[in-house]
Image (cartoon, rainbow, N blue to C red):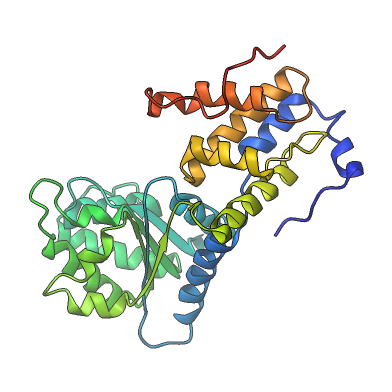
Length: 311
């Protein structure tokens, strides 16, 4: 968890170029327990494969905006590809399941991700053989597949058994652990009758959810999250985002969806910086809401009240 910034720490922002401060807030990632647990589970799955004769998988599921893609992006950045005299090393291979999801479209996507200049060339069988050779040559230790829900046909809602079997065989033959990332119904794909072997391989599952606000503990968790964000904003003064009234407004504006919270606070910070303000006030938050979130639900009143023009 980030340490609270002292007044001295905050004062350093006074003379920092605004472009640097905007870049800081755009790149801001907040470490908090629920996402840290997902990150830790990925790391454990990755490490376990080096000690086991049978690779295991992990499913991370959650609605849009709960932080799945951000966690994956950060993990991939922890293990960047490198270039040596022997060739390209890709410790973590990250690909997205295409639509429509077929064995050929997926193997093409993975060949493209690993860097094959002729990714689309060949039959599905030849492409699969090539992918396995690439994975061995590039020393791939972990495979991450985003948008796993595409293994279910969006029109018929049928589980695509052929591509599920292809993935199972790839996992068995390469012994590379796989992280599947998808929407909340992704577990139903693994639990489908006939998918028992894949289900066994992906017994570990994590669901990321938006913050709730019903109990005192849930409210405390959300306010703690806002406090961490506040402590890391490139502003010379604390904005007191964890104040109960302010936190309630932020929750009402975002429904506790992390991506929406960050979109609101990033925009509010830029507004503050451009208007030479050193903390986020309700009028700034109100304007940021109108500019970034109001269009999602036009009938919803602005939780921050009337917009005040920022001088």
